[in-house]
Length: 176
Length: 321
Image (cartoon, rainbow over all chains, first blue to last red; front, side, top):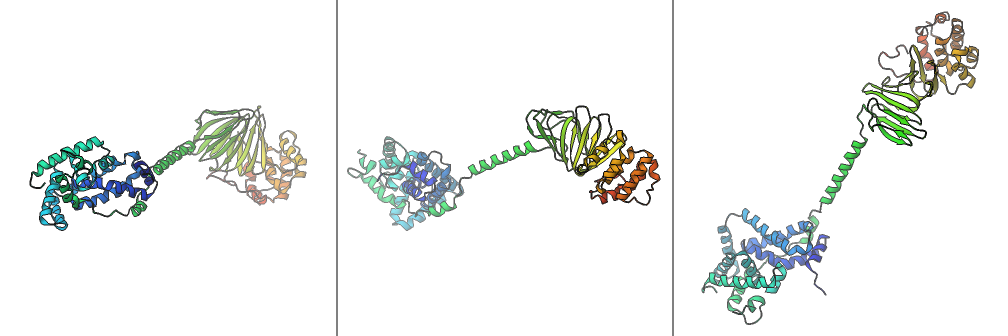
């Protein structure tokens, strides 16, 4: 059975086929989530991911070029993150949420280490940040990242390599 | 450093990468997928095609209204066929509408009604104001159907003026200037100088080329009666008129007083008195010296007796009728 491409799924979804949109969700939720996680707290990233796709579904008919869904959903995610950040007060609040979230997800030391690693990725340039989020948080491979983001495999490979290099430097020897 | 593991997880695991994978995996998206089916039901449908269609409809409607809209005091040519010259779709004072052998034009004015211009006809708009719409029929045939107040719609012909009293009529003017008026409903006041012929529904009157107006005569009257009435100013064949007159023709007889001699007036009085008894104030002797005022009181009972509808009047118009 052949894999339906994004354009076919978008056209079907625009015609009212929700199942097609659910496939798009499965494909792009990690991308959206990683974009959001680079800007928002983990809890907010989860919530806003859902909102991004709900917004996308309601506005899907405005997407004139179905094949451009990947870029469109990524832009939607970035805009949603900015909107959310404007509504939220400050980074401090986000950090507090991170801490709270960590408390429920693992041991205290692991939580702190994970929070440090996450913050280190957030501090990377956007291209590296999002690529590494997809690789290290969402568990996607380089080829999958390339397919979902529209970046060439070469660009993804460079982003991963340089991003990881910077991340190692940022975390020093202590956490990695 | 070999990036294979970082790239696609192949090869020997990179310790740092695998550690970070394990550490950061906790942040992986954990929220359940939304119920998109419910969202799909609620999502707004694309409305712009509807909006465009609605806007287009509005534009078409507005254009349509503008196209068919005629100011209340103006005349618009709404239809034409065959050879016809119409200077402006909304006529201006002085505009002349001409039709050829197969031509016809319909003019409409919201405040007056419709005017159908027949073949080989020349009509000029003289004026169109709120209380006066006047056109000149130089030649040809028009058919008017009006809803305006009495006295508002006027057609001038070379030999007479037809004043609409709320009616439907056909008016024809021959090349010599004479013509005929046939009223289908209501009344028309046909005047020329001191002459007046009030023509009711179902009756006709003629305008002669030398400016005489015949009295109104019903179209269903006997042909000889109609001919005698038509030619009375020349033949004075009162005997035929008296002998063939019906009760319905009382109006014709009443109008004949203006053409009769003293002796003829008495004869006419006697016959008319038989058909519709004269009011007490009108004596047989009085008609010998006939003036309009002498028989004025006879109008109402004659109109009532012959089943004609009353003349619509503006205040001061035809007082006494």
